[in-house]
Picture 1 (spheres, rainbow, N blue to C red):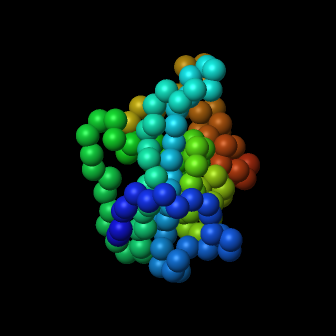
Picture 2 (picture 1 turned 60 degrees about the horizontal axis):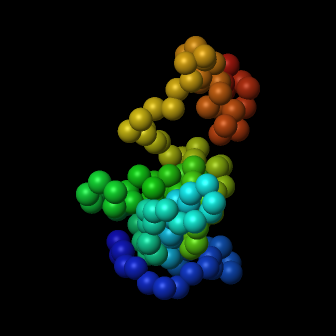
Length: 138
């Protein structure tokens, strides 16, 4: 695992990570949260360069506000980067098909009070393009 902040940016032309053993790769991954007028309010993540290889055990550690949750949300495609890029399983982080191989339990759940348990499972299954037959088993 390597983690350094640099000024390089832009996804690789091939879209492939530097090695087939790399399962997570970020380069200059940056996320700014903006106000109503589009002005940068908070820089939550600044130029993160990271590689996690197959078989490694990896943890994100840091104080509150250091960008851990933002990084995870960017890797899952729940947020979009301001600049830089992220690849997960050799797919762009915004490609939700890679999420079929990922388990994620957020600190705060996003449950809608107007949906019952079955409707909630169906809703999230649709978000991740689960086929009807698989959603019907829920």
